[in-house]
Amino acid sequence: MLQNQKKMILSPYISLYDVIVPKDNILRKINELVDFSFVYEELKSKYCLENGRSAINPIRMFKYLMLKAIYDLSDVDIVERSKYDMSFKFFLDMAPEDPVIEPSSLTKFRKLRLQDVNLLDMLIEKTVGLAIENGVIKSKSIIVDSTHTKARYNQKTPREVLMNYSKNLRKAVYNIDENLKNIMPPKVNNGILEDEIEYCKKLIKALKSNEALSNYPAVKEKINILEETIEDDLEKLALSKDEDAKIGHKTYDTSFFGYKTHIAMTEERIITAATVTSGEKHDGKQLRELVEKSIAGGIEVENIIGDAAYSEKENLEYAKEENIKLIAKLNKTITHGSKLKSHDFEYNKDADRYVCKAGHMSIKKTSTRPKKHAKDGQGTVESYFFDVEKCKHCPYKNGCYKEGAKTKSYSVSIKTNTHQEQMNFQEDDYFKEKSKHRYKIEAKNSELKHRHGYDVASSSGLLGMHLQGAVTIFVVNMKRIIKLLG
Image 1 (spheres, rainbow, N blue to C red):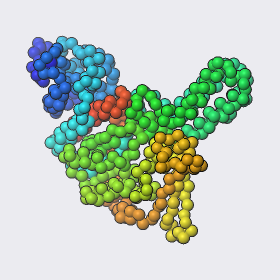
Image 2 (image 1 turned 90 degrees about the vertical axis):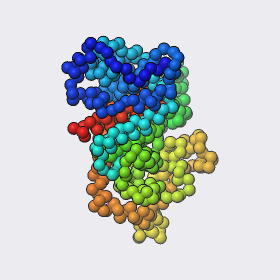
Image 3 (image 1 turned 180 degrees about the horizontal axis):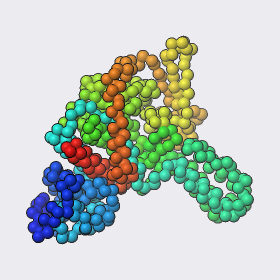
Image 4 (image 1 turned 135 degrees about the horizontal axis):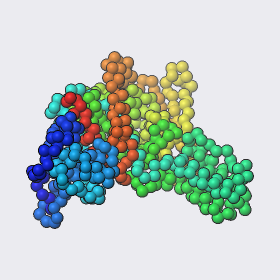
């Protein structure tokens, strides 16, 4: 049963807060600035209003989640600290002598009360509304970027998994005879997954050639595990308890397993919109939604500032339709226009490679130019080649990979006159001046990760990531608003 959202605190010790919690305390300032009754109104439908035991006030439970985001502590630690930290009790609307909740209550609150609640958009809109109301947002530009968060479970990349299994296999061999090092193939350490797979195959072949050695139970077991891991391909390597997390690429030879949070932020560093996706999603595809959410929250958008990932043709056309200036440099390899099946292949600007629908990254690229364009520099074709061994077992191979083909490539035509309007705009002083503000969102991403624990997911699944993003961004925005208000 849910009781009235707020009760008057009757305690002979309530005056202690005036002595112990200073006026400039961040938690006191948040309490003074925000009316948290919106949390009660949003969540009361998740409770029974008439029957059962009295429920803990949802506002207090939500504030516990805020404390976790501010101080980057576990459920157990945050509850333990709320026993003796008077600023915590003041923030939680508790009397100094009140008992605290059981840590398990926070888990139940997240799972039972926050299901099907669009907390991310609701909390961001709340903070943006406060910022507008207090006059701290004056710019008409939003800066867009994404930040990655590693999954809580199975943070190892496929390459790291293979390295671990091959290391265990070598150890098993050396336990039998250390002199067998001379039959091992030379190790690779260049960060490329394909080379690591090839090394593992050579290692297995070398050990299997020694029948007596490969039949030792300890060695045979490790060979079987490594073989099975290679045969299962990348999709199997990426499996973990967190089924929503996916492999994303930061550069060609570095990757992460987890999620992306795509963010829009004003020049005053107030986050105005966010979307949470699995790690392999392309940054540019989120632009329209980020802009529309920002406008719905009350932000007037005249400029969008981003990197080359946002300069694809669809975004340029959208910005022109909405009379918005897109401050994003063109990258020739993502301006392929309406090429057949272009929606199945997305360009990764960091790796300078295309990624197919299945999440496989191209392993090399070539550049050619027809003879008739040898002098004018037009008509260049860039071809991106994929690993056909992966294509053979890919669930999307129908219509993409021709059975028996020895190569699989995706070609992009580059024309110097494509997007000439944007190319000219890039040389404008206004474009160059506005581009200088992009660093601000990099700093904001760093703050989310290093001060508020956003580098690693606190739970599994997209729902858990949405919740973590919602509370963390709410906290970060509130801190920024308080700072801007002085």
